[in-house]
Length: 400
Image 1 (tube, one colour):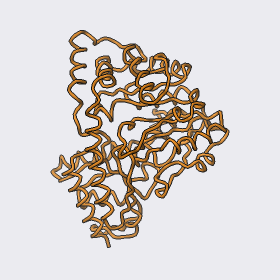
Image 2: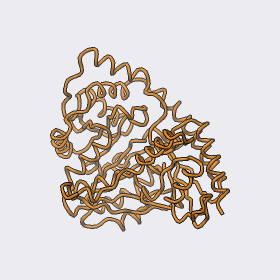
Image 3: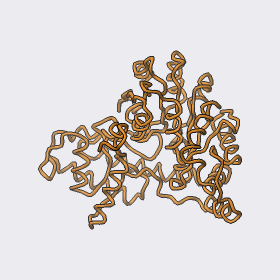
Image 4: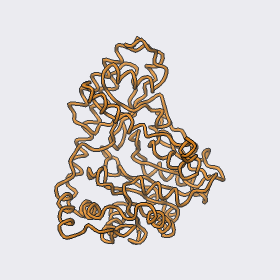
């Protein structure tokens, strides 16, 4: 349609949203479908956080908020970065957005010019390259390998950087792979970045509090303070606090970048919903005891899913360090014939035939830039996960 902007031709719809919608439609038709595409915890928002929003409404906190966020929340964000990440930010270096997506989008909008490149390790969250495209930049991809735990290596990073590179987007723990970088791994990547002072880092730490076993979370500006002045450290309350629908993300970084993002947000949405900001304040400053309890549940689900998928014929599922996703390879199923008679030629075929034959909705890995894999979200009940994995085992056993 000639009326629409040319930029839309560079953008694809979200595959994760599409598979969730497809699962809803099939359920509405009466199909028995287990949807494992959604990236949100199945836990409810803690009561103290909900009460903080109710109290805010009752005392009249229902007017426009400042564009960059209410000051108490911004001060709490600065306190969180100091307390948990050893990062010193003044509250004026922080910004609150309508979810992490707006933070990312505004950072790209504030900095990208035509021809600027953004290095994105693959597999990647589906929205990263689309945001870059909308904002006029060019996404370039640094491929990772299952053998390396889907982690970017210094060699791959060095190869991906060009004189046009403006940003590297890091996501640890990762959506879709669950891979998380140790302090030593981040330091090795930082050593590469120090050789290229024109490259900034946007680190998406949204799954910070969802790491398992004895893994210790670190963020890159903490590991290498010399990157502090060119790092935007992003986080939010969606995942750890089960607040996806509240739409509160936040970040801290160099003051001039934050001011530029504030200017864009002021012409875009203005401040995030005021009562939601007061709820986020309670999330960051109130009791945190539910986080380790939820982590323990997630870790049990992870271990169940990894074990059962590795018993499925043709599936190889590594153990992720964090988030609530697994990213198994389905390479062993390529070339085999599904119950429908169709030959599986790629991961998109695999997930399509799995949905048709067994009613299990997962997301194909090529949507995240690396296949033949697929992503499963284990942010649902253990009973549903066990049933889904039984169906996957049955499906792969029937491939010929």
